[in-house]
Length: 336
Image (cartoon, rainbow, N blue to C red; front, side, top):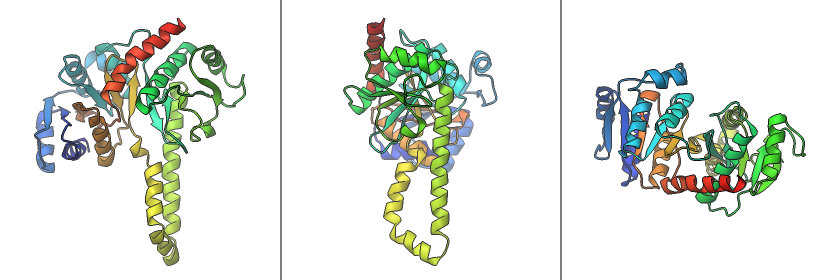
Protein backbone atom coordinates (compact mmCIF):
# COMPACT_ATOMS: atom_id res chain seq x y z
CA UNK A 1 0.00 0.00 0.00
CA UNK A 2 2.78 2.41 0.89
CA UNK A 3 4.54 2.06 -2.46
CA UNK A 4 1.35 2.48 -4.51
CA UNK A 5 0.30 5.41 -2.38
CA UNK A 6 3.69 7.07 -2.82
CA UNK A 7 3.56 6.64 -6.59
CA UNK A 8 0.05 8.09 -6.75
CA UNK A 9 1.02 11.05 -4.60
CA UNK A 10 4.10 12.05 -6.61
CA UNK A 11 2.03 11.86 -9.79
CA UNK A 12 -0.37 14.38 -8.28
CA UNK A 13 2.20 16.71 -6.75
CA UNK A 14 5.31 17.91 -8.53
CA UNK A 15 6.78 19.36 -5.32
CA UNK A 16 6.67 16.09 -3.39
CA UNK A 17 9.58 13.74 -2.81
CA UNK A 18 9.12 10.45 -0.99
CA UNK A 19 11.83 8.37 0.66
CA UNK A 20 10.90 4.72 1.15
CA UNK A 21 12.79 3.06 4.00
CA UNK A 22 13.19 -0.69 4.26
CA UNK A 23 14.89 -3.64 2.51
CA UNK A 24 16.06 -2.08 -0.76
CA UNK A 25 15.64 -5.23 -2.88
CA UNK A 26 12.05 -5.67 -1.69
CA UNK A 27 11.19 -2.00 -2.29
CA UNK A 28 12.81 -1.92 -5.73
CA UNK A 29 10.82 -5.00 -6.71
CA UNK A 30 7.55 -3.42 -5.57
CA UNK A 31 8.32 -0.20 -7.42
CA UNK A 32 9.04 -2.16 -10.60
CA UNK A 33 5.83 -4.16 -10.28
CA UNK A 34 3.75 -1.02 -9.67
CA UNK A 35 5.39 0.89 -12.52
CA UNK A 36 5.26 4.65 -12.83
CA UNK A 37 7.79 7.45 -12.55
CA UNK A 38 10.49 7.18 -9.92
CA UNK A 39 12.17 10.56 -10.35
CA UNK A 40 10.92 11.79 -6.97
CA UNK A 41 10.90 8.50 -5.12
CA UNK A 42 14.08 7.16 -3.56
CA UNK A 43 14.88 4.09 -1.51
CA UNK A 44 16.95 4.06 1.66
CA UNK A 45 18.05 0.64 2.85
CA UNK A 46 17.17 -0.52 6.37
CA UNK A 47 17.52 -4.08 7.63
CA UNK A 48 15.35 -4.18 10.77
CA UNK A 49 11.78 -3.48 11.80
CA UNK A 50 10.29 -2.79 15.22
CA UNK A 51 7.14 -4.88 15.08
CA UNK A 52 3.81 -4.25 16.78
CA UNK A 53 4.64 -6.99 19.28
CA UNK A 54 8.01 -5.54 20.26
CA UNK A 55 8.42 -3.57 23.45
CA UNK A 56 8.88 0.07 22.37
CA UNK A 57 11.77 0.70 24.73
CA UNK A 58 13.53 -2.59 23.94
CA UNK A 59 12.95 -2.17 20.22
CA UNK A 60 14.46 1.33 20.13
CA UNK A 61 17.39 0.25 22.28
CA UNK A 62 18.23 -3.02 20.52
CA UNK A 63 17.27 -2.45 16.88
CA UNK A 64 19.57 0.40 15.87
CA UNK A 65 19.01 -0.23 12.14
CA UNK A 66 15.23 -0.37 12.30
CA UNK A 67 13.32 1.68 9.73
CA UNK A 68 12.04 4.10 12.35
CA UNK A 69 15.53 4.70 13.74
CA UNK A 70 17.06 5.20 10.30
CA UNK A 71 14.30 7.65 9.42
CA UNK A 72 14.88 9.85 12.43
CA UNK A 73 18.61 9.80 11.74
CA UNK A 74 17.91 11.21 8.27
CA UNK A 75 15.76 13.98 9.74
CA UNK A 76 18.39 14.78 12.33
CA UNK A 77 21.03 15.04 9.59
CA UNK A 78 18.81 17.34 7.54
CA UNK A 79 18.34 14.82 4.74
CA UNK A 80 14.56 14.70 5.27
CA UNK A 81 12.02 17.08 6.78
CA UNK A 82 9.42 14.77 8.27
CA UNK A 83 8.94 11.27 9.57
CA UNK A 84 5.70 9.42 8.82
CA UNK A 85 5.04 6.01 10.35
CA UNK A 86 2.20 3.53 10.71
CA UNK A 87 4.17 1.15 12.86
CA UNK A 88 4.45 0.68 16.60
CA UNK A 89 3.15 3.91 18.20
CA UNK A 90 5.16 3.54 21.37
CA UNK A 91 8.34 2.87 19.42
CA UNK A 92 7.70 5.87 17.16
CA UNK A 93 7.34 8.15 20.17
CA UNK A 94 10.33 6.65 22.00
CA UNK A 95 12.54 6.93 18.91
CA UNK A 96 11.40 10.49 18.25
CA UNK A 97 12.17 11.61 21.79
CA UNK A 98 15.57 9.90 21.72
CA UNK A 99 16.64 11.14 18.28
CA UNK A 100 14.94 14.55 18.02
CA UNK A 101 14.32 15.55 21.62
CA UNK A 102 11.45 17.41 23.27
CA UNK A 103 10.63 21.07 22.87
CA UNK A 104 11.68 23.20 25.86
CA UNK A 105 9.04 23.15 28.57
CA UNK A 106 7.35 19.97 27.29
CA UNK A 107 7.55 16.90 29.52
CA UNK A 108 5.23 14.63 27.50
CA UNK A 109 4.85 14.93 23.72
CA UNK A 110 1.41 13.80 22.59
CA UNK A 111 -0.55 12.81 19.50
CA UNK A 112 -3.10 15.26 18.10
CA UNK A 113 -5.59 14.73 15.29
CA UNK A 114 -8.47 16.61 13.70
CA UNK A 115 -11.99 15.21 13.94
CA UNK A 116 -14.87 16.22 11.64
CA UNK A 117 -17.75 18.13 13.27
CA UNK A 118 -21.00 19.80 12.24
CA UNK A 119 -19.03 23.04 11.96
CA UNK A 120 -15.23 23.24 11.74
CA UNK A 121 -12.73 20.45 12.51
CA UNK A 122 -11.83 19.97 16.16
CA UNK A 123 -8.37 18.91 17.34
CA UNK A 124 -8.31 16.13 19.92
CA UNK A 125 -5.19 15.54 22.02
CA UNK A 126 -3.91 13.08 23.23
CA UNK A 127 -5.16 10.12 21.17
CA UNK A 128 -2.81 7.40 22.32
CA UNK A 129 0.72 8.42 23.21
CA UNK A 130 0.21 8.79 26.97
CA UNK A 131 -2.31 6.49 28.62
CA UNK A 132 -1.36 7.66 32.12
CA UNK A 133 -1.14 11.42 32.58
CA UNK A 134 -0.86 14.08 35.25
CA UNK A 135 -2.75 17.39 35.20
CA UNK A 136 0.31 19.32 33.98
CA UNK A 137 0.58 16.99 31.00
CA UNK A 138 -3.00 17.73 29.94
CA UNK A 139 -2.32 21.42 30.41
CA UNK A 140 0.67 21.15 28.05
CA UNK A 141 -1.53 19.28 25.56
CA UNK A 142 -3.97 22.19 25.68
CA UNK A 143 -1.20 24.72 25.04
CA UNK A 144 0.25 22.78 22.10
CA UNK A 145 -3.09 21.88 20.51
CA UNK A 146 -4.35 25.44 20.90
CA UNK A 147 -1.21 26.81 19.23
CA UNK A 148 -1.45 24.26 16.43
CA UNK A 149 -5.13 24.97 15.84
CA UNK A 150 -4.48 28.71 15.75
CA UNK A 151 -1.68 28.33 13.20
CA UNK A 152 -3.26 25.71 10.95
CA UNK A 153 -6.88 26.91 11.03
CA UNK A 154 -6.20 30.62 11.53
CA UNK A 155 -8.27 30.81 14.73
CA UNK A 156 -7.27 33.80 16.88
CA UNK A 157 -8.35 32.31 20.24
CA UNK A 158 -9.11 28.58 19.94
CA UNK A 159 -11.86 27.45 22.29
CA UNK A 160 -10.69 24.62 24.54
CA UNK A 161 -12.80 21.90 26.13
CA UNK A 162 -11.84 19.18 28.62
CA UNK A 163 -13.35 15.76 27.84
CA UNK A 164 -15.31 14.51 30.85
CA UNK A 165 -18.42 12.60 31.89
CA UNK A 166 -20.44 15.76 32.41
CA UNK A 167 -20.46 19.44 31.54
CA UNK A 168 -20.78 20.64 35.12
CA UNK A 169 -17.80 21.84 37.12
CA UNK A 170 -16.62 19.09 39.47
CA UNK A 171 -17.59 16.22 37.15
CA UNK A 172 -14.93 13.66 36.25
CA UNK A 173 -12.12 11.78 37.97
CA UNK A 174 -9.26 13.33 39.94
CA UNK A 175 -7.20 13.95 36.81
CA UNK A 176 -10.02 15.84 35.09
CA UNK A 177 -10.87 17.89 38.17
CA UNK A 178 -7.28 19.00 38.75
CA UNK A 179 -6.77 19.73 35.06
CA UNK A 180 -9.96 21.78 35.04
CA UNK A 181 -8.52 24.11 37.68
CA UNK A 182 -5.22 24.49 35.80
CA UNK A 183 -7.03 25.39 32.59
CA UNK A 184 -9.49 27.69 34.34
CA UNK A 185 -6.64 29.72 35.84
CA UNK A 186 -4.63 29.82 32.59
CA UNK A 187 -4.66 32.51 29.86
CA UNK A 188 -6.08 29.95 27.43
CA UNK A 189 -9.63 30.30 26.10
CA UNK A 190 -11.01 27.47 28.25
CA UNK A 191 -14.77 26.92 28.00
CA UNK A 192 -15.09 24.04 30.48
CA UNK A 193 -15.96 20.36 30.31
CA UNK A 194 -17.36 18.69 27.19
CA UNK A 195 -19.03 15.28 27.00
CA UNK A 196 -18.42 12.61 24.40
CA UNK A 197 -21.58 13.54 22.52
CA UNK A 198 -20.30 17.12 22.20
CA UNK A 199 -17.15 16.18 20.29
CA UNK A 200 -18.90 16.46 16.93
CA UNK A 201 -20.95 19.59 17.58
CA UNK A 202 -18.06 21.90 16.74
CA UNK A 203 -18.65 24.22 19.71
CA UNK A 204 -14.96 24.04 20.68
CA UNK A 205 -11.78 24.00 18.58
CA UNK A 206 -9.62 21.83 20.87
CA UNK A 207 -10.54 18.95 23.16
CA UNK A 208 -8.03 17.71 25.73
CA UNK A 209 -7.88 14.25 27.33
CA UNK A 210 -5.38 11.56 28.26
CA UNK A 211 -4.22 9.11 25.62
CA UNK A 212 -6.34 6.22 26.89
CA UNK A 213 -9.62 8.14 26.65
CA UNK A 214 -8.58 9.79 23.39
CA UNK A 215 -7.73 6.52 21.67
CA UNK A 216 -11.02 4.95 22.75
CA UNK A 217 -12.87 7.99 21.38
CA UNK A 218 -10.94 7.74 18.10
CA UNK A 219 -11.55 4.02 17.56
CA UNK A 220 -15.21 4.25 18.63
CA UNK A 221 -15.75 7.08 16.13
CA UNK A 222 -14.20 5.10 13.30
CA UNK A 223 -16.29 2.07 14.16
CA UNK A 224 -19.48 4.12 14.26
CA UNK A 225 -18.77 5.63 10.83
CA UNK A 226 -18.16 2.17 9.38
CA UNK A 227 -21.36 0.83 10.95
CA UNK A 228 -23.47 3.69 9.54
CA UNK A 229 -22.01 3.12 6.08
CA UNK A 230 -22.77 -0.61 6.32
CA UNK A 231 -26.35 0.03 7.46
CA UNK A 232 -26.97 2.39 4.55
CA UNK A 233 -25.54 -0.13 2.08
CA UNK A 234 -27.73 -2.92 3.46
CA UNK A 235 -30.88 -0.85 3.30
CA UNK A 236 -30.31 0.43 -0.23
CA UNK A 237 -29.56 -3.11 -1.47
CA UNK A 238 -32.74 -4.55 0.05
CA UNK A 239 -34.78 -4.67 -3.19
CA UNK A 240 -35.15 -3.12 -6.63
CA UNK A 241 -37.05 -0.11 -5.33
CA UNK A 242 -34.41 0.74 -2.71
CA UNK A 243 -31.69 0.32 -5.34
CA UNK A 244 -33.47 2.86 -7.57
CA UNK A 245 -33.73 5.23 -4.61
CA UNK A 246 -30.00 4.76 -3.99
CA UNK A 247 -29.27 5.63 -7.62
CA UNK A 248 -31.26 8.86 -7.32
CA UNK A 249 -29.59 9.69 -4.00
CA UNK A 250 -26.10 8.80 -5.21
CA UNK A 251 -24.72 12.39 -5.14
CA UNK A 252 -25.97 12.84 -1.59
CA UNK A 253 -24.56 9.48 -0.52
CA UNK A 254 -21.15 10.31 -1.97
CA UNK A 255 -21.13 13.59 -0.11
CA UNK A 256 -22.14 11.82 3.10
CA UNK A 257 -19.37 9.26 2.66
CA UNK A 258 -16.78 11.99 2.15
CA UNK A 259 -17.78 13.51 5.49
CA UNK A 260 -17.70 10.32 7.56
CA UNK A 261 -14.87 8.44 5.82
CA UNK A 262 -12.22 8.21 8.55
CA UNK A 263 -9.51 7.75 5.91
CA UNK A 264 -9.77 11.46 5.11
CA UNK A 265 -8.76 12.26 8.68
CA UNK A 266 -6.32 9.41 9.21
CA UNK A 267 -2.96 10.48 10.49
CA UNK A 268 -2.00 12.39 13.59
CA UNK A 269 0.77 14.79 14.46
CA UNK A 270 3.13 14.18 17.36
CA UNK A 271 3.38 17.56 19.06
CA UNK A 272 6.07 18.60 21.51
CA UNK A 273 9.10 17.35 19.56
CA UNK A 274 11.99 19.13 17.85
CA UNK A 275 10.88 17.93 14.46
CA UNK A 276 7.85 16.89 12.43
CA UNK A 277 6.59 13.40 13.22
CA UNK A 278 3.26 11.95 12.13
CA UNK A 279 1.50 8.70 13.00
CA UNK A 280 -1.03 6.66 11.06
CA UNK A 281 -3.03 3.50 11.34
CA UNK A 282 -1.16 0.45 10.14
CA UNK A 283 -4.28 -0.39 8.11
CA UNK A 284 -4.03 2.70 5.88
CA UNK A 285 -4.94 1.94 2.25
CA UNK A 286 -3.80 3.55 -1.00
CA UNK A 287 -6.46 6.27 -0.78
CA UNK A 288 -5.28 7.19 2.70
CA UNK A 289 -1.63 7.22 1.70
CA UNK A 290 -2.24 9.35 -1.34
CA UNK A 291 -4.38 11.85 0.55
CA UNK A 292 -1.85 12.13 3.33
CA UNK A 293 1.14 12.59 1.09
CA UNK A 294 -0.63 15.18 -1.06
CA UNK A 295 -1.58 17.19 2.01
CA UNK A 296 1.92 16.92 3.41
CA UNK A 297 3.20 18.22 0.08
CA UNK A 298 1.22 21.42 0.60
CA UNK A 299 4.02 22.43 2.93
CA UNK A 300 6.55 21.90 0.14
CA UNK A 301 8.50 19.27 2.02
CA UNK A 302 10.06 15.89 1.28
CA UNK A 303 8.13 13.15 3.05
CA UNK A 304 9.44 9.87 4.35
CA UNK A 305 7.66 6.53 4.56
CA UNK A 306 8.67 3.51 6.62
CA UNK A 307 7.60 0.59 4.48
CA UNK A 308 8.99 -1.94 6.91
CA UNK A 309 6.45 -0.79 9.49
CA UNK A 310 3.29 -1.56 7.52
CA UNK A 311 2.53 1.93 6.21
CA UNK A 312 2.05 5.58 6.98
CA UNK A 313 -0.01 8.66 6.52
CA UNK A 314 -0.40 12.18 7.80
CA UNK A 315 -1.76 15.62 7.15
CA UNK A 316 0.50 18.50 8.03
CA UNK A 317 2.23 21.64 6.83
CA UNK A 318 5.85 22.09 7.76
CA UNK A 319 6.00 25.82 8.52
CA UNK A 320 3.10 26.03 11.01
CA UNK A 321 4.27 22.93 12.85
CA UNK A 322 7.82 24.23 13.14
CA UNK A 323 6.50 27.58 14.36
CA UNK A 324 4.47 25.74 16.98
CA UNK A 325 7.57 25.12 19.10
CA UNK A 326 8.14 28.80 19.80
CA UNK A 327 4.45 29.56 20.32
CA UNK A 328 3.94 26.71 22.78
CA UNK A 329 7.10 27.63 24.66
CA UNK A 330 6.01 31.24 25.06
CA UNK A 331 2.61 30.14 26.35
CA UNK A 332 4.19 27.83 28.91
CA UNK A 333 6.61 30.53 29.99
CA UNK A 334 3.73 32.98 30.53
CA UNK A 335 2.08 30.50 32.87
CA UNK A 336 5.37 29.86 34.70
